Amino acid sequence: MSKYPAEPYKIKVVEPLKITTKEERKRAMEEAGYNTFLLYTEDVYIDLLTDSGTTAMSDNQWAGMMLGDEAYAGSRNFVNLEKAVQEVYGFKYVVPTHQGRGAENILSQIMIKEGDYIPGNMYFTTTRAHQELNGATFVDVVLDEAHDSTIELPFKGNIDLNKYQELIDRVGADKIPYICLAVTVNMAGGQPVSMQNIKEVKEISEKHGIKVMFDATRCVENAFFIKEREEGYQDKTIADILKIMMSYADGCTMSGKKDCLVNIGGFLALNDEKLYQRATELVVVYEGLLTYGGMAGRDMEAMARGIYEACDYHYIEHRISQIRYLGDKLEAAGVPFVKPVGGHAIFLDAKKFLPHIPQDQFPAQRLAAELFIDSGVRAMERGIVSAGRDKDGNNYYPKLELVRLTIPRRVYTYAHLDVVADSIIELYEKRDQIQGLKMVYEPPVLRFFTARFEPIS
Ligand SMILES: *Cc1c(COP(=O)(O)O)cnc(C)c1O
Image (cartoon, rainbow, N blue to C red; front, side, top):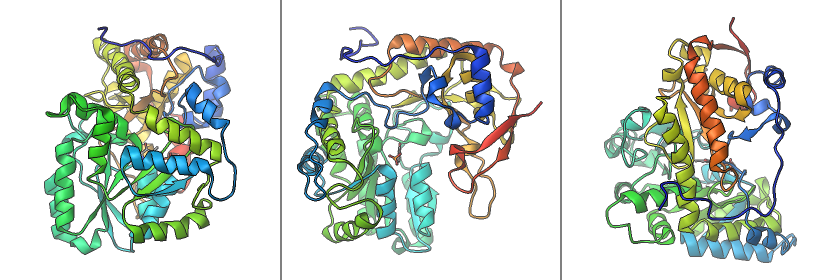
């Protein structure tokens, strides 16, 4: 068997890519304020900005799109989606939402009181924003190692049980409505959580009457790592592992744009009837009726089908292999990035890549901009800009200052990844010439989306 299995699909439809000159890309980057979120795809060659909603759907999903039942109430596609979530993930109740953050909004509103604490294995931007908007303080209880880009651990996304227990002892369990357990941890580089850790988190939580809510957005990737690395799961299918993982959760938020293999959609799943009741009261205010929640019928059908497709071992094996392929190429050239390679992206370590640029001159932001100018590859910053400011207006200074190269699902080939690797290696060789940035516009929340920068000369 090849170390990098070839695509377990063949190409039926193609989307041409525009090839640009360096001069054109330089101009586009200046116009975008050195923020890759403000570029137009028209100017992008290989788009690794995100794997969110950028998935290529299958012929089976597209066929399902034609079966959209666009009734306002009781769409048959909702019934199919509900059945898929119940069968594959095992939760009782499903509230569809327009995407993951819609589910986060509802969950945060129904569970959080002013002054509560929400522990989690590293923050995620939208998740923490909703927790804070509802008056909670997010507390990071991930393993210390997750903040170090050089330490290799099989399950670097695990919760540090001592940190979790200390928080319970310090603030009291009645101030912790739930723990938010992300499987995998996006911001740590797509690092997985072991089944053992999930079980232990469940035990502690149950003892104190704290609910366990998964951020299940990347649960298929997490299941793959459990199968590969955890004793006792080698012979289980991805579907078996998903079912077992979810059996330790009281509910989950899901961005369908990731592991459900669709371009838009999400849901909140719950086992508790009373919580579900409250969620249905809010979904009509923020999303739509409880049988569509902001999605078209056809989109719910595509998501229902995607949920089953993502359980195919060859799909997820190929996905992870693509990411490893890019990682192996960079490793051979000595480029610093987060180890071990996680489930959805390569994260360049900008502090090590550009050690001469202080963190408040946004080294990762600059590196992402330079990569685009060099080769038309669009990546994004995951460092001080993404981390934002605390309640008192002070910048968070995250330990990790990263550039994320996110691989969309089923979209690019290994040849595209060669282009990406070659460009990064070239930049690494002339890294001394790269300088920092200053921020010239900063929006009040989620600043990384729209902030603008200028080069420091
Ligand atoms: C994408 C993502 C979300 C938010 O989902 P959206 O669909 O973008 O609103 C939440 N958590 C994680 C881990 C994600 O990757």
